[in-house]
Image (cartoon, rainbow, N blue to C red; front, side, top):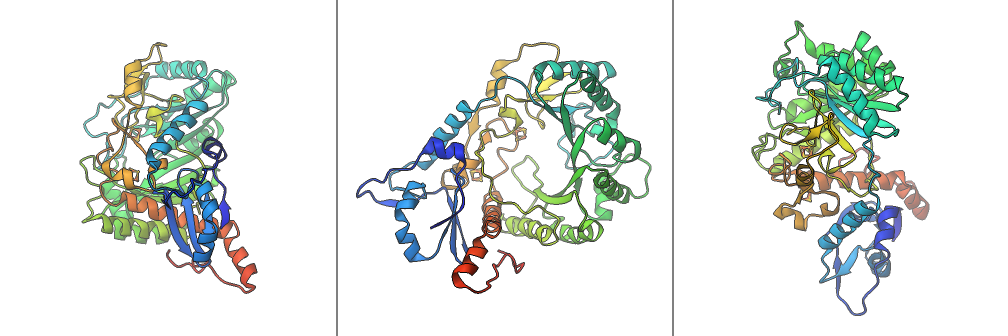
Length: 457
Ligand code: SF4
Ligand code: SF4
């Protein structure tokens, strides 16, 4: 057995080596994902984050002791899900923050210049932050962060529809000597010229996420901007290039549904033509859910996983997505909603926990130090779907009872997508960490790994 990635140190410390039980029958843990590579089989333990290579059956037999120690093999009667829950609880308790808030998602407005049919804000109240509230928000952030560096996530609506409030908040924080940086989720339409200058010089904008739903015709129809512009698609693509040139990392999100999956493959090619080789532009795919128990309108899980993964892999082949290796950290929070270090600040100064159901998840206001503790607690309640108990992703994935996606995210092909994506990452790690190199040395001849040949895994 050869180690490719070590276990996460904190988890390795909490778990310690598993002691072998004499005569006990052992089986593979449910928390193991395997994938063949040219040198044998890669095994990844999703609780500890350890990745190993097993070079054939004889190696597997010879490595039995190590596989037990490192929790790839567990006793037949072992409940690894219960064990994973207890380790996550311990991890969260021991490494809890010290009370300062350091991450703020700020909605400058719930209004927007685009009219996407799938937007979760349909039917919600449209309101905008005033100048006075923006000043109060800056005071609050300075107070709540207790002198620690903060991360600001600009959100909306369209955050740039009220960009003057971003100026006020950042200028005041700067005046007070606060250390801050920011990210943004935006349609990108206004991110150019003077706005972009303020973004880099005053807002310390590091990255922006911009969604494209299809090629020119589809995009312009779906977004239905209220601005006078014959071709907003072209405007946004120009803005993406300008932002990257100005030093902002742009993540282009491709919303995938059954209706646009084929078209997105062509969009990947167009993006590669326009942005290929350009620094600071990446693209990634994301499933389009509708909160009614359907993800993207696919016929079945197979179609969903196949089409989603085809786009993901096309982006990788074209050099538009980051090559990832498996995460080496335990997921101790599901999202902002169960993280005490994060708050969502609404345009009227309200504080919320969930950025989709922000009205329903209000817990207080910037004008009071009192929080609705029952509400805070209720947004931390966890839940599991029946299919989770046999899922290898169990240690790294859980949901919140009140999350609006809870009835959606694993109904169809999401589990398959997560496991297949992890397999891709395992092979990347194997290649990057010298898996192929070691194999070459052993065999004393050059052997290309499947990944290097550019074939799909
Ligand atoms: S939500 Fe889906 S991916 Fe996550 S543990 Fe459950 S079945 Fe697995
Ligand atoms: S509760 Fe769900 S929708 Fe709300 S922030 Fe968390 S993951 Fe997002």
